[in-house]
Length: 319
Image (cartoon, rainbow, N blue to C red; front, side, top):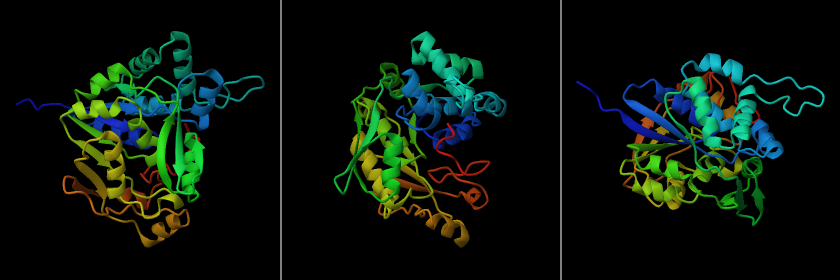
């Protein structure tokens, strides 16, 4: 008997999406492709974008590593930082970011550069940039202020400003072959990831919502374990679903939520960072809630979105 292989499109960026891809890769009945946000302005990716005029490579690199044949060995080489030497503009960047940026610079085509990296790593699935046009994430807050740039949006939200609206400046469009690929997916999985800088921006690209409406399978949201700072006090899974449905103009059929809280001591530590467990809230009738368990948060570090990492807390500047 031959089992049908499901084609799943995974949407997001940051540290959450590679974790999801690494888990799905081992399932023989799932073929996972990544559709990656391209609006990173921080760390090595942001510097390379500004200095070389290339698209930010960090999230693409991490997703390709997650789908590679031997991710441990590849990470050891491609995530190592180049030595900082006098007059060396590329010192301090990861080898993988520099490699992907140079491949883009000299091929003139970011998709060709990604395909070359995939071939080099022996990736199981595709890694798609949602757009190959440059833009920045912008947000307006309840106090009337605005910010521009992924790092600035995160910082303002974490400091207590409530996000009212998020947009891309300038407006950009989905890459045509990515739109075509979305229509072939059997399901779409969103997240986990930083809500306003890794998840929402990808759906603000012109053409993404139209492509999702052409897909007949379900949209599944993998929710974060924690809120992300003062500006998300009272934020719930139901709020996340409502905001995503507003921009994609179709229902979110399934949410995967954590239903096992860590110890009081761990919760107290996160409370000092103004982070709290993400509660379900009142979900719409069409949205099925699937409970999960993430006991790993008890003893390991977490990413910025609250998902566990193998070695400890994630640094926003790591990639």
